[in-house]
Length: 215
Image 1 (cartoon, rainbow, N blue to C red):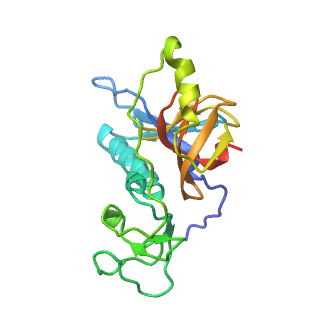
Image 2 (image 1 turned 180 degrees about the vertical axis):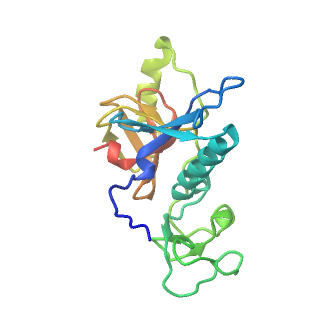
């Protein structure tokens, strides 16, 4: 039979999906006419991915975006637990709904503080683990030159855990921060080792970001 050997793996969280509007020409018989990009978040490279039909392309994009949301669910902003995707060696039940965490690996999310285990859909409803509550998220603002100084002076007055500096620019997906190199970022919650939450001092905007982009 056929033999295969491992060559390389991509860490999906290091990439973002960039949909490219394209369509096959009417009457064209060319295969693989539909494509999208997997762009590295540090702008190191961009991979072009191809599909035979628009439907197959959209299925791939939806699957990748779902995988990214599994690593860093949006619901993490609503809890004081420090949840991470976890593979349970023995059968385990969800603390919130008491139903089985199904699967062989990465069956659910485990809080590194109190040990609570939950389904992804139960993150919003699980009880507090006793850690300090997250500060309220500030409303989205549009920064203009005349209020930029006000944002800088007020940032330090917002609750935060500690301050970091951006090693390089980052343009995140929805619910994530966008910032420039050397921007100061105030960390409000360390969700897991791949996703933190905070706000940029320069703009005042709040969102998620990968901790390997800061120091």
